[in-house]
Figure 1: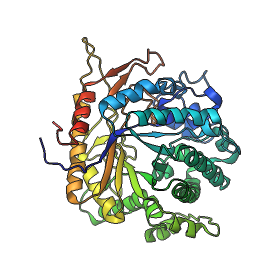
Figure 2: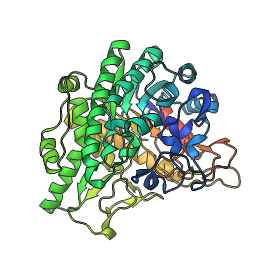
Figure 3: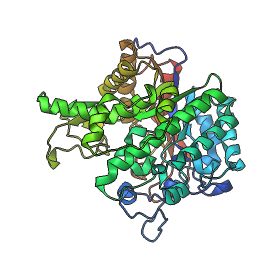
Figure 4: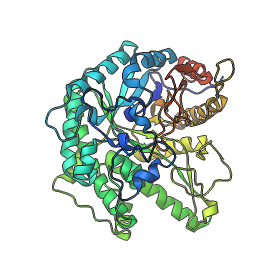
Length: 480
């Protein structure tokens, strides 16, 4: 037992993304999107990030394209949502596949079959008392917008996104009141292919092209905020950041300064534009020193300033430790952004450093800076799971990971942080975004799907299912 006081109405639940669970990649009029041309295996990000990637399926070279079937949520959503309800979910964070609604992205009229599918999903959630939290763009966009327009490098995409968002708000205004614009938007400069829809031709132009494309997303996000508030009175719409607190490797002032600058650029440029409606003061020098010139149009500043988000949602998986000069053998190579190995932290099966205290630090940092509600919408442990002879899956390692992170949230609330909710990532096993693997499992629910595409898709409850069920039932008071 503990004394953590999670607020009444705290939104406990789980999170997935359309491209990682739905499958049915060409059914009912859906168009191709980025995820559909991403091969499986640990090479996938290297493959798609290299200049010259042609965004085509090559089954002779790559044996699996796991997002094509994923875990078949498209046909099994009733079964899966019933399991979420059994877990006690108050909310389900999910995303909509843009290319189900506008198959190419630039059409004037949406695809009714795609809209109808999400009607059914939302109705099923609401039937069980589960509040949908919907990400409008989660690491996918119609492939046509990538190949014909260059993704978010093109300012034209702003109007296509605005039309898409307005279509969603009008259609689902009576079913969805919590919205997020772009998933992990601040990760775009490190991996622009995923959220910005292009791979820079050379490293020299990566920052210039990425920040220009990010500016287009900022404007699009503000226009979505405007439309959401106009169309759905009482709605709340937030941004979504991948948050990694940055530690200095030691007390050497040069390392402390380096860590501070890394923290500013990665964690706060996107947050400041979304919440404060303006680029932060430090960005001027950063842009100058990196030869970044952002082309803006009349009215951009006013749009960003007037239509800011209601809350910040975030993913948290790890912290990051920085040293101004480091050698290859010092790098924490498994981390999303390498940094230097932190000698005080253990790592997951995939080399991601595990740091629950970093979540408390991050929540305090964000709340102190912005004073808007926060929502942890991704947090979880990717690990290998083993089915025992009796059919059980004893994932105590996952329970331990989640317990310590939920405790960190409880401490942050006691610190004074206003926290809306928590949705554990990959509440049901799904295709890993970074590696295209099924064996990197996050869920409370096991799905019999293997890396080679085999499996029955049978769902099975893990030990963590019953543990998290109890956490929700007691509003975080029973974590042991």
